[in-house]
Image (cartoon, rainbow, N blue to C red; front, side, top):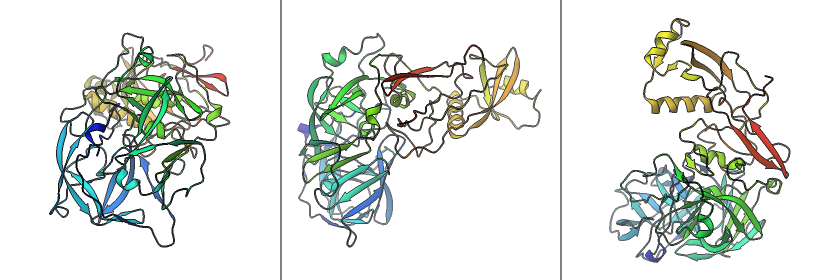
Length: 492
């Protein structure tokens, strides 16, 4: 929750983002925190859910709940529970769109979070969060620790005292206001204040577009769109399948991070830094008592540089965002076949199939009745079924592509069915310890992670030749231009 003078800016970016609220009145807390005996540091598992939020588990009233770790929320939230109701107060909360609502508050007597016992934490209550979680762990609790987000091991580490973790990386001082972290850095050459917000699942969101960023939006189809949705919004997402963002350099201390993804949320007074940015780092240490943050880069970050060109040189770490229907750099991919990471060992050529041939089925699912009539002429043993709902067709195709390495693809060619058994070499192979950029390891998207390794950058675009999509991606490694493509050479 936030004071109304600090209403939170939140872009949805078609990834789910949490609207943190404004706290207008709150009573004093009688909070106590107990660590396990003789432990100074506690490690708690977390994961990034499909929406991009940081999810952890905690036990409240003997129920294990999924909670979002939200550094941008000034007050924690728990689901409404009759056992918690009583002589409670209410608080007026405002979401990122300025929609206000009175919420009941309650003093939760006992929370167990990874072995840490929290007693008497005053929380707001909400019937339904609708963000892939049951509630929120906010800054009112986090501020009592020295917190380390370890992206390599997917652990959040809590320490009792300041300086518990070895400092490493870029050190940034911050101001703590209403339990939320603010610091000043430079975006596209302009100094500004940013809210460090792990409840926002984009990268960078600005409240007011300025000329130095608008200059980057040159194409007719590249326009600024208000990409926000509030916690109390009742309308469905107005963005449908696409939203526009631009890439801009961001300075973090002495380091310049190229091509951060910047979106725009109309009518909000300040700027957010979210989990896409957070996942760039091996770890981030938030020393609340000392009011400093340490950003620790991956060991190999200095070995990767990208061109500043707009369309051809697409930073590979952003391909996942494009797949999630982001329209940027003159490229628009709406509900397209996912990009995937794997070691591209070989290409498999199909003599009778060419780019542009129509895919009419996959495995035992066909897309129309006419295909059924044709395919039983060549295969009467397989039990096929017809799925004519295009949304379900796309979902099944994407699931098949991303979860396995084998599939039978059915094409319509010259009025006849051509079926091919396709094999992908190392799709979904075990990921390295550290994935640069952002991923959804738990959901098994085809594009799962990018690893800019010191030796190899592994990236493949499987299936797309068969799907009629020719793709060439250029990137820079160790200062040299590299290109990967699914277009077969002419001599194949």
